[in-house]
Length: 427
Ligand code: IMP
Image 1 (spheres, rainbow, N blue to C red):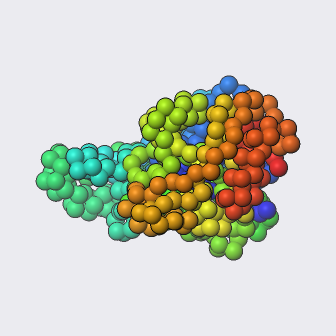
Image 2: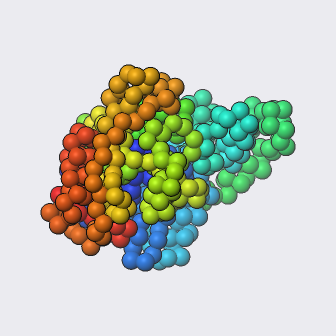
Image 3: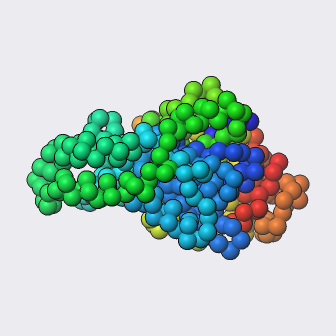
């Protein structure tokens, strides 16, 4: 398929990078279309662990081109740090295989500061979102308020300085009077960011044009979604969400291509559920079983190191995600983590005050009150990591996958059975 989008079906951390990595042989270009350094994508190559935040994980494949498109929010310091680390590990990264949109928004130092201060001030009232502190929300706020700075602005230093000064005129009183913080000096802030301009310059491109030309040349594209459907600003558990469209629809506006040109959506879903940060999570396990999943699954945030909240598979949430992104097929990840569980539970619907709910509700109060209703299935004890053929899976594992597939409403084409790069069953 010329253009496929990979989207998370839960609250992020579904294992999208691993699926993308496995599909890389079939594609030419990988595009990030939303989010920023809040994302954490981990890939293992042999014993080597690579963790990406901004650079698309496709960069490990030398002949692929990676694009950070206009829908992303880019922290220049973080981007250059990742590029530097990749260079140290002898991975090729230059203007020929990494393209940064001239229209992407810049995460400014004050975005990170406001993100952290705002979270701190919400802590006392229990309204903390549990953000990654990477300045994502405040940067998108500025974008929508038309006060943001874009990558292209780095090319006009005087104009850049003026816009930083104008923004700080509004922001400094907030820093001083609301948060009791020292004010920021516009020139200092502008200098700090402009200092990155020269090193970023080789990567800057009109990426919408690049992508559209590539599609005309029948190049195969893969859009790498960050976060997951339930963290989407429109469709997620608002306000406990990220600030961008992490669903498939975001790929069109986030990269400057027509939705007609994105032909396939592949949803990535974990065999159980995790969530980092605050917000409702109906199937959360707050007991030893949740802790066991966390330990076995290595469920600690790639970006912040925070322990992830863990729970059973939630078909109500996944069905909703399959619909919102028009998912054609699913990749199921981390099935191996369930090995050793005597019994497995799948949430088929919720009960809210005695009412049966099969549709994920908009009202957060209802999600918070939702009592998950489970089907129980037998577990298995055999190791799955070496298996590459669906028919060789233990019978109970096959039954679990088939039931999960029926409940989710989309065929499962890939099954992750281990951390290794090739630990994937194609079906
Ligand atoms: P922000 O994106 O840093 O503003 O954080 C908003 C919410 O999204 C928080 O609950 C974060 O934990 C969550 N979040 C952001 N990025 C990721 C991710 O890549 N994986 C999982 N959760 C994420």
